[in-house]
Image (cartoon, rainbow over all chains, first blue to last red):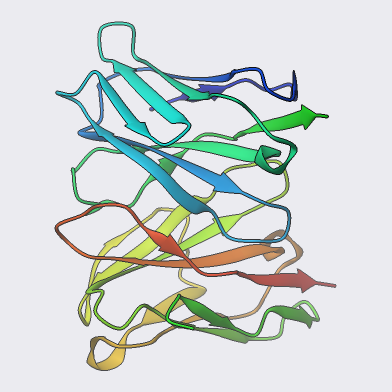
Length: 114
Length: 113
């Protein structure tokens, strides 16, 4: 079965630095790979979506890369701020449009220290 | 507020009781999803609807679970004969077919005692 690995330990980053989160998966590549942010007690919030034929996507301070050869996505937050502290979830969409729902990783807890 | 809403936000029930949760998606979204999330885990897909048709169900959705979306609008998720293992956050999400990304509601936290 498909396995998704995200940094299991909390990631501590100093304010102003770039935070880099990793998502690795096994087996076949999804049509879309998505990143979500989740705060305690709340539902996930969509951040970025990248398709299997795309290498990189950017949105403001966020950047995501997708390497189907390595079966890996990297999620970067530049000029990090304490308000960026949250759990970040990687999600795989095999159907390319959500027809089978999303398969989520466990998430990485990011802490930005002032 | 035009986001996804869920009701109730919290539910405490005794083992063996039935519970029902409601989800109101973003009005123009034609897809609606249910997920379950336990502490320290990512959301797990349960089922989804396109308009009023239930198109996919996870093996996690035992025969004690049933979901409906009458008229392709709001949806309900019912759990019959609840078990302690059903304690979790139940998340609803909606999306447009053409975009793929999902908008999540705040969730319903179920505690089975």
